[in-house]
Length: 85
Image (cartoon, rainbow, N blue to C red):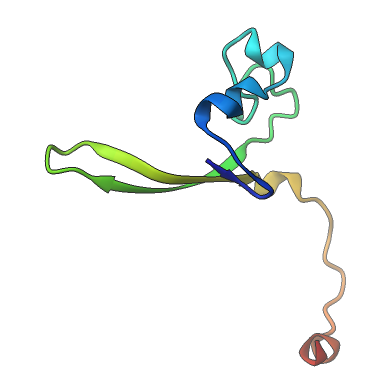
């Protein structure tokens, strides 16, 4: 599983969860996790393949912060300055 600054196995992801999550067998990354008090979940992008038997096997999983965690109001866009960068 890829995170913005790390790559972990599923077992490592759960092992690094906060203690209150571990006791509930949760990672704290899902909105539905009871230990996730912020109720902001992550976004998962999954690349997978389907085998000839019809099974779907995940090859790569990328997790990032949920869009709900970005807060603020856009009050101005300077199109001229943005074009110079």
